[in-house]
Length: 228
Image: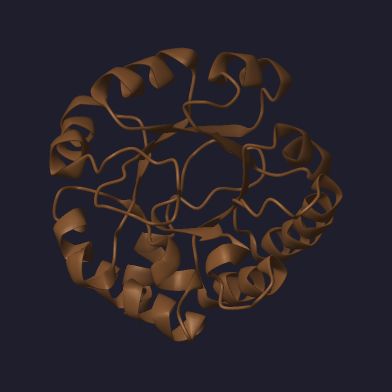
């Protein structure tokens, strides 16, 4: 990728206090899929390799809130030093305590409206799976949407059926709000996603489950550069 293309990828990179979702690679952490590496180890590799935003989404049931808080403290330092926005999934309390840049909520989590009251300066994202959910999330004050799962995925056990390209194209054509496409996205189908106007993509297991995370992110960035 040329330097010009790399700069273009990062043109929307957030800084502390900004609510703008960056374009590029939206990384997600979760030890269930990280081949024995800790979230902190993976975070360091992903940030060093150039992800544009990083979310902590730990679903292991045997990890205590104290352990998650301690991990997030370390990851906050890593992301802050690199200027990479750090978002925490579900746990608004931890996000506030560690000074994260944002909070991401699912359809069954705390309401976006109420979160805005306690975190007025944070970026708030909301997972959506239908036009109705997108409309409500926007009305409630979400700063960006999670759109998916585009394809079938094994990352989340309670996830809904794949929404396919219809809902993705609806969001692109209907709303101006930033969004991240997620769910079953791999290198082999990434161009199909990008060709529909997507600017931010999340490839969960394709990155954290890779034998060489740095090499995998480089490969994904190359594809992103080819589409620009």
